[in-house]
Image (cartoon, rainbow, N blue to C red):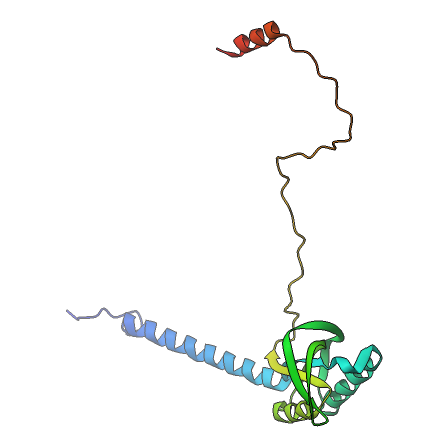
Length: 191
């Protein structure tokens, strides 16, 4: 008798399972390759976060923000979403050299822009942002087009067992206790 049992088609059962697994893996790899090619055509999504110097003032910020968006538009990006710059306190004091003078900042106008592009622009954009003296710091990251921020949830507090009374409210008149009635009620409760 043979060591392995033959299947209906004359192939050993263990080899049949191996062939099925091999074909499934090839189909999976082809699917992943097609998805990778499609994502390359669609472009890469980046998020640029930056902090403008507070010396600009509230009036100049929209113009500087528009200039920065213009630089990105000239590079051929498609804007997904953005946030207007707002003045925030910085976690620590940051230094930036402006017109050959070191300045220290403890506040700045923070903002971000999410965009999509097909051209590799990390090096070019990085160089342009380093030369911009209106920006204290910036960060460019690869991300996804979907909104990744979770909505804020309301804080739900449990009601405490303690009750707070208004001391100025009038109190009900104290009812005098009858000791005999209290004793009767206690005896009724005891089984």
